[in-house]
Image (cartoon, rainbow, N blue to C red; front, top):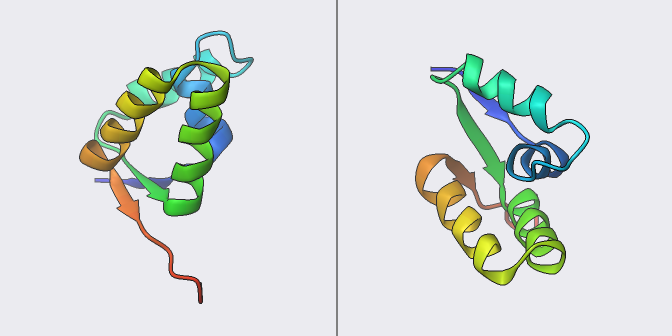
Length: 80
């Protein structure tokens, strides 16, 4: 299994169909179904906050749960 470190812009592009790079990101991950996303806590926070403000609270919660359950969430400490 391949692990992919995913940043906020890639996550937003994947989940939001109106984003400029939506098709490219979605096609990449659909073409690589065995890949597992690595989500840093800072990226997670930024992504769910963006979705909450720009889309909806309900969608931000759903995406947050999906990211924590289906992918590898890495909590960074203050020292990191």
